[in-house]
Every structure is written in structure tokens, then in C-alpha cells.
Image (tube, rainbow, N blue to C red; front, side, top):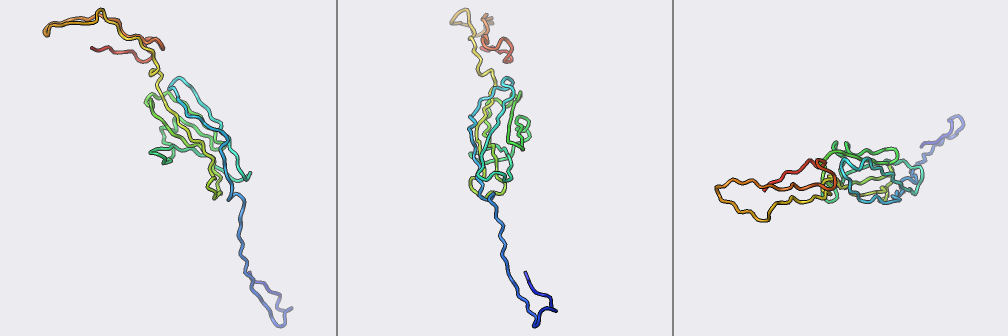
Length: 191
């Protein structure tokens, strides 16, 4: 910054330079975000459990700082990656408040476990605590793993056959006592 006075007022002419260092700080650089609850690990029964909702809450040490709400998948022992198109078909996430919901009828997910990281980030914070994180697992299962099946019953306990002989064995097929005859796609009996 250079300051001076009009030349007609200055005899002799006088000028001086003034250097100003302006550093702009705001408290958002030290904002900490904390997740206020816990989201427990879940077992989701595909095609049966319907829509599951999470309405997470967070606190911040500096109210009013800009924030983002994000969700990532944690893979390979801790690497966070964006959700894939397949995962986005199951999960939806609100970027305005962090709410999340999921549901699926995709039985190809059977036995998959997704580790998810849902978090609120203070955008301009330099603090190591700028993210309030909920990390939890969702395990997807097919309901048929829970079936109570009565084993097949045979008329006798031991059968003896001649190597070149053709035989017919009559037996009562196993029964699904839990979900009904064809709920789990039926059964194939083999000897």
C-alpha cells in the first residue's frame, strides 16, 4: 500500500510506503465434527426386510461452517472408495442431511458384507477430527438359509444292489417347514 498527500499541499514532496500483511482466518479451520450415535452392524434379509432407514446425527464445535455429507464403501482392509453403480442401486443417500436408506431384491448379493462409512465433513476444517464418521457393516442374506428342513425319509435303512440290476427306491422328499413348498425354489433329491 502506498500513501501520500496531494502534491500542491506538500512542500517538499513527501511519500511513504506502508506494507500490510493480511491473514484471514476463521474458526471453521478448527471445526470438529462428532457422530452422536452408533449405527449397529445389520443383517438384511433380501426381498423380505423392505426399506431400512438411518437418520444419523452429528455435532460440530463451530456452528454454521459449510459441511458435506458423504458415503463410501470400505474395502481391502480399510481403503475407502466411492459407491459403485451396483451399490447405488441398493443405497440412497441424502447429501443435504446425511440420511441413508437401502433395500434390495437382488439375490446375487447373498452372503456379501458391505462395510460402509457415512460421514459429515466440515469443508474448510484442517482438524484431524473434521469428519464425524459412522462405520458399520450390512450383511445380505437369502431367507432360505434359515429354512427348517425335515430330511427325506427312506423305507429301509440299508439297500443292497446287484451291479447290473435296476432298482427304484421310494422315499418321502425333504420338506421345508418354514416357508412352504416352493418358497426357496424347491429341492432336488439325489442319491
